[in-house]
Image (cartoon, rainbow, N blue to C red; front, side, top):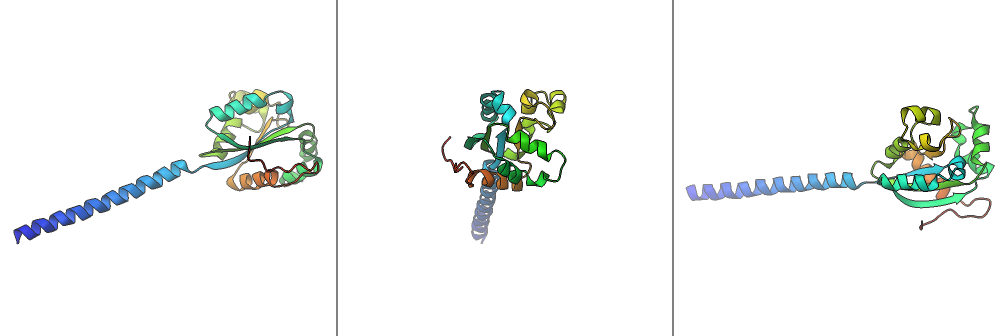
Length: 186
């Protein structure tokens, strides 16, 4: 009977150890999946960034910060596209200036990907007001190439929902020039 009891304990210990190992493996796998989950966000280098020849510097900062550039397109936006993209701001006093600014020259539009892409890109670009960025976030992209609140060089999605909407806007729509913005290559 003592022998059976020992075998029972051995068998029980083996089952418990096996269960604990399974739980640990699942927990590790779950943590690994969280680490591997990536987000996508939309980045726009606005006309002042393109005219100021900042696109190469911005691309380097993006890549050096661990992002991958999934898609990109350089285009000159028309008024209808800008009005539609920034529709949420249409009632604000700065809207006419925003439309004029965003149609003043070409923009570089990129889909960036990495873990925590939305928040990391927003941190990298700095405060919306480039003048403020120059004093409070001097290493930010807006401090590097932005001028002020309206001419701030770059755009970044502010939420997961905005990122999905904005990416879809640029990379599934056909523009008036007939350019289809659905690129798989860089």
